[in-house]
Figure 1 (tube, rainbow, N blue to C red):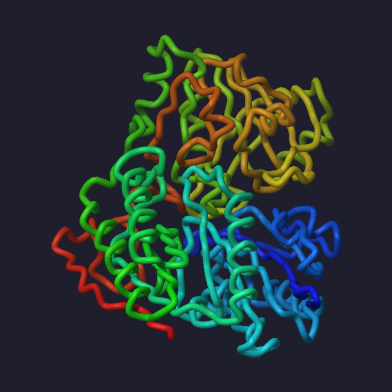
Figure 2: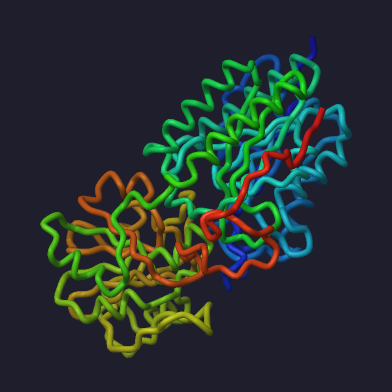
Amino acid sequence: MPAFRVFAASIQQETNSLSVAVPTLTDFDRLTGDAAMAKLSLEPLDSPEVTLIPGTYAHAVPSGRLPRAVFDTLLGELLEALPADPDGIFLYLHGALDVEHYGSGDAEITRAVRERVGRDVKISVAMDFHANVSPVLIEHADIVCAYRTAPHVDMEETQRRGCTLLLELLRRGKSPAACLMHLPMLFTGDCVITENEPAKSLMMRQDAIQKETGALQITTCFGQPWVDTRWVGPSVTAYADNLETARDAAGRVAKLWWDARAEFRFLTETCMPEHAFDIARKSEKKPVFLSDSGDNTTAGAAGDRAGMLNLALTEQQRILIAGLTDAPAVEQAYRIGAGGRAEFTLGGTLDHTHADVCQGMFEVVSLGQMLGWYGEDAGRRALLRRGTVDVIVTENRCAVISPEIIRTGGADVFAYDAVVVKLGYLYPALAEIAPRAVFVMTEGESTARVETIRYQNVPLPVYPADPETRYDGIPALLKK
């Protein structure tokens, strides 16, 4: 029997449509051929029954809405690499990519690929737990799976599961029925931590329902609330041999998540910005990690607000601001050189309207290159110092999610009493070393106060902004 011809590709960026940061083509780490495949976890496709056809890879740090021209280029490169006659296609997407003109970029990628190859080719998609799932995506993909963890520790496992599901469909020679349910509620991801309750038990009960019903796959995504789109928020998609089973499984799991809605809340310690450094000062456990949640670059915010820096400069503690986006300040630091001193204006270079700035005399402690989220070179950086406060200033927006990345910024977290990161929840590598973590409720494009966002396209009402919101249990899509 001839081997299955399987094409694999990935385009990923998470969108924050509230963000002023406009992504460009140069923001993407773009690869083709074997180099692209080396970035993905495709082990199930390394089999005598598969001939792998390398596609493209394009990943970027979360940002504002992607311009149509940039998206068209990325999609065009993917389609150019796509052969005319594959048996199957594996796509590794994010699920919350929002594009100028198109809306859901993930749905448009899947639609365009389906249009190119026809209905008989099997398409499997792996996505993020924070995907906003459009019915268009479910209509054109044969099966979709997503991360089951937040913070995410199963990215590679999910890709492998997507490949395994694709092979199962290829062997079967038929596609499953699907049912997509959407839930009218919006929470930040920081309220839904899968190693904690209620999400931990809900995932276990979801697995039990999948086994009981015989469903092939049940996929829950909790959505990305900073995208003003029709299909924002939690969804459940079930796949089964028949539509009745798919609808039963999706309906039961969706009701579980809806019935638990009052239990989703911040489980980590929270505070307002004006109290953050008081907490750090009084803490016996150091360093205290303080998440500047409203300017979270991993949620697409600009990362150039200097509000926490201004508060830090009133302190006598050793404080590290681990990441502030300001390309002109980095350029100035390079002109001055390490050891030099100058008057700097930090912050507000992307968000000219809302971002706080900090003005003052700083010393240039060191210069270097910053490590990126995916291990790529994220551009130049400067470590600046004023008094007891150090600031890692980056020329590009960076996701400072690990001690290794902070070290490339020229700093050691254990040399400080407090470390400010532009995150929400701490990513695993930081959570493992943080003696104490505090979620600071700062204002900004990734505000944790979702109820304050003025949505234009989200169907209202939604819970918990409106506690009286009702869930009708009607599927958003049924596909035989």
